[in-house]
Length: 192
Ligand SMILES: NC(=O)c1ccc[n+]([C@@H]2O[C@H](COP(=O)([O-])OP(=O)(O)OC[C@H]3O[C@@H](n4cnc5c(N)ncnc54)[C@H](OP(=O)(O)O)[C@@H]3O)[C@@H](O)[C@H]2O)c1
Image 1 (tube, rainbow, N blue to C red):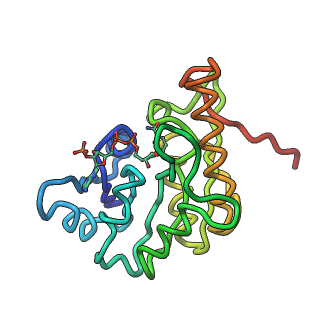
Image 2 (image 1 turned 120 degrees about the vertical axis):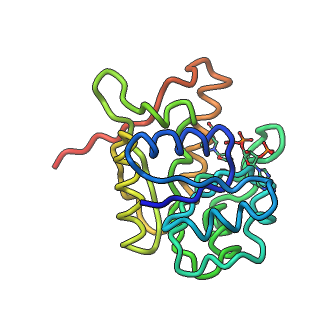
């Protein structure tokens, strides 16, 4: 699959490395003039891996109608002080408003970039919770998570990003403030 990744930082590079190793083709959109447009045109799937405060600018005026847009961002307030959106709205829904017509899936936001190329610990794959309104886009997102080694779990429509983003804050604060470290991921256990 051809994947355009906007942002070539911690998350963009980790996802790109993992997918390249799994046989996908990746093109990055960076600050180099024209490269964001090229990555969007290249990608059957476009991944948003930018700092929250750059996201509106990066999406502004682009035509993403019909594209699958995987949103890995978190709307983190300065100084990790919290989230800028919460409970009645979410970054994922804001991204959908900034990219009209895109088939947005919120995914890859609830675990550290360090885990994205190797999400298996002691034989257990970390869960990758995702949410979105388009069934076909959700299924592509799940496959791409699976290709990295995650256990993909559908969490519901895009409004569920209101809860996935606080889950990301839980991971971040546990990893960075409360001594669990970054080598961890959430796992959903189900009886069925
Ligand atoms: N880090 C994690 O563990 C993690 C995990 C899950 C989700 N997230 C979320 O994922 C997003 C990215 O995080 P990150 O840690 O990968 O950030 P990062 O390392 O700072 O990378 C962000 C990338 O976006 C690029 N960028 C910024 N403004 C741009 C613009 N105007 N045009 C093109 N590219 C631009 C940056 O380029 P420059 O280097 O040139 O500024 C950089 O390559 C954030 O929303 C974060 O909350 C992070």
